Length: 466
Image (cartoon, rainbow, N blue to C red; front, side):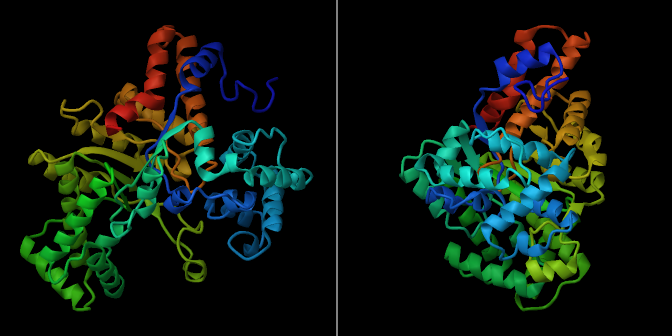
């Protein structure tokens, strides 16, 4: 019988153990997609207690707490921080077989060195111990990143963001690269005229461009794109239900823009045409600068309208969607590829039914110009757990080249989420080690081990140019 979460956690044979300990464990972390608040890095935030760093903003934990019947005041509400932590500790023993149970105890071990299981009887001791550590300078935001062997993070930023905190971290001489990622979703959200126009006004101010037409709107967008590039941005990201690739003419887009800027609501056809145009223009700009574009596909967001009105977005009321993927994605990629303007691309799907779809779609547009140009990205959100990551790795292995995979990311708002990289590495090593033990791939530790190291670190470094 194996002990819970020992040094060979998730490693089920000797080959897996050797791959992990010799080729994966010590690899630095490139976290090329996350939602860390840049201001907390820029200010090198010192967190007041474990609730502030671990529970605030964590919709994964909130969903579990609600499922256990815990009142909202302990999730997003105004309950005292020790009480919120106690309610999470009460929840943890009920999360067995949910990745939250693994993540919780991995995050207590690193960086805090706590090996006790979190439950109601240990909650007070663990809260006091972690809070004491968090109040020490060596547990500031930047120092936690150092402890976890992070080399680079890419945050997620709107075109109107000032990027002042990225600039501050660089000017402070912070040795870990903190780069922005261009996330222009709001610049194509024309579903509500008032919301879009309010955003356009912010864009106008940020770019110092008088937006009077679609041409000047794009001038402002391009100016901000240039600014992001100057600050080291090399990635874009788009959070969309699915790719939209309707036919349109430039005249139609000019008219649609004029209509919405006048305050008129668009019809469904106009909305789809405008979003199609914007996705295309964003992709062209990324290609011009040699960026990598990312697409997070398939989330059905804000399902509870009642709780959305009360609490707002990103509070844990999102789920997997079942949108059409293949045909519009093919149309979009083919339009770019036809003019040789398709940049490096990473797709992440939220519905596991789309694993093989995206793995084969990526293969359609590899052209020999860049190794792994089209990437089927790591398991995301509801799929960044053992089963989801295993299925993603298996689909990519069967239908593409696992050896060219750019590996894991946290997709997290928490500085304590870096053990997710370790979780992924253990799963990867176990899959490959099992194949070695079964005689399905050669028992060549150097060959397979080097592939593991590449997937954990070197591929992303080379692919993203960092």
